Length: 203
Image 1: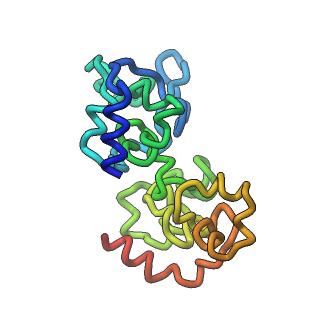
Image 2: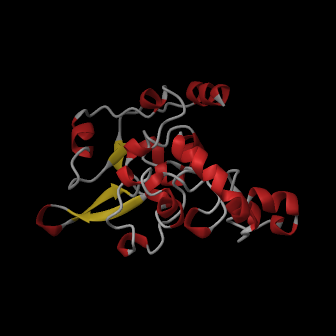
Image 3: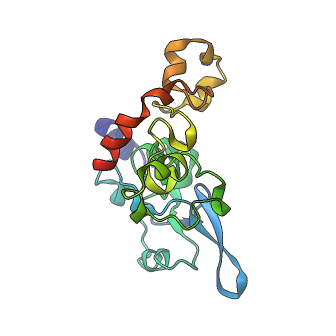
C-alpha cells in the first residue's frame, strides 16, 4: 500500500494548493443568515489517515481554510484533488481524515438506527464505552463500530468494493457472501458478535 502511495505521488501533481467544498460524506447545517453549510457527516477527528504523507499530498495552500474548517457554521473544504475521481481510492482508503471521507471507512460506513432524528441524536462518543450494547445496536456510526457484527443489527462487509461485486452476482457464492455480508443482506454473523464487541470496546 505504501508503494502504491509513492507511485501515485511520483506520477501526479497532488499538491496543487486549490481547495473545494466537500461533496461526499456531507451534511448540511445552518450557517450565517440561515444559509446551509457543508460539514462532514463524521467528524474528521474520529478517523485517521493511514500514512503521514497525506497532509503533504493533499495540501491546501490557504492556511485560513484550516481555521474555517474548525468553525461548525462554515463550509468544510478539502484539497480539490481529494474529490477528483482519479484520486478517489487514495482519498477513501489512505487519507480519509485529510480528505474528510471518514464515512466511507469500514468503521463509519453505516447508519445509526433512525438516522439523525432517531434514538442516537443525544448519544455522544463519550457514552460508547459506558453503553456498549446500545452503541453497537443503535449508534454504531457515532462510535466507529460499523465494522463489527451486529452494528445496527446488521453484518459488515469485510473487504472494499462489495457494492461493485454485488452487481457481479457474488452473493450466490458463499465465500464472497461471507466477505460482503451487509451488501448481500446476510445476517449470518450475528451469532458471534458478543466477543468481538467486548474486544473492540476495550481497545
